[in-house]
Image (cartoon, rainbow over all chains, first blue to last red):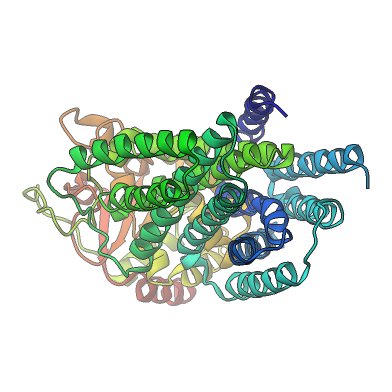
Length: 92
Length: 456
């Protein structure tokens, strides 16, 4: 993949992001932040590749990267779910 | 699994993120949207484990277990008031994970081609900056660091030197492929994250947390360039865009630009500045006066500020609203974008107290209704209801969007004292004829009001 293609994908995805996010109501901005934060934990995919390579340096950095990214992903999605389940309609 | 099949599955994961975010457009579908995003993440992880030619699974298993357990415990234990700190910490973790991935790529494969070298440099700077910046934000939000803006002399010069040095070292790293250059770059970026966040005041934290949220996405995307992963580029771009949208909304709600938040050292804790001379007498109310006014109103709009959450008064607030509703009073909540300590924070705090989301209205939805409302009940809010922002062009908060509480038929303000808010300016709302001041702790006042309304 060339740098140019990467930048193209990045730019288009950013536009999709702007379109989608501007439609999220202010009520849900906190779950939006924690949820999108969990998505940025996608770096976990890179961390897995690093950790799986073998070699001492990759071993150490890989372990730490996987652990940090996993906190981000697991914690992010769980806390978002915890918040969203509190938003309820009026019972009456 | 063939490379094409894996690429296709990564694309599906990215699409699940987009659908997941799209479902956040309503509280009805939001929870399923989050599940969809999490499913996308699980898919991406499984594909990677099967496809990436991994030779050693033990480190991975250990990292996933350790990180997953810590994440799960934090997510379960955190109090809703502590959400900004948690998100700040998570932003930082994502940033440092991204930086570690590219550092390992660089150290194992160096020297890299020019393009790859540049992306490693960018990813390192952004990832490490996000990490240390988020740690400082966490410290300020958690009260470990002073909330006031820590401005020092030569701030701009230092920023300039750090930025120039980082660019120079990055160039050295790309051309020479030297491991030492990477570590210097890490050090510079770490320092930059700290010096850039320390001068931001406690009141500006919503903006800075949203900004670091955006940076954590950019870090992930730039890592995607290094390891040539479209999944990382798309997801990182989505988060980067999301954080930027929120940063923008927050800056507007505070009547500031992002540059102003980052560089002005404004937005302390309010104590530092003296209030302007008070402009006359206030009308003090007792709990019974206020309770009667509320009980015999037809419509009430509650304006909660962060003071309410600090006092844990949102449950008493809900109790009071219940009492009023059984008497046939129409109760709604007007939530200013900066009412909490991060975007949308107040809504989460009220949802926790079981306030139905239909009653939570934002500035644009409710502002026209104040003139038609009998009572506006302001609890723990100050600057966001200060009419000066609308009327006095010489005021520092002039132009900031406010809730037009002063246009309601009568106003009850629950507040500890007449001390000014974050902006450190006096609030004429408190001296209006139609305003009653109830000086008390928010939680105690709301509990007393609920009791008094029941007996009214």
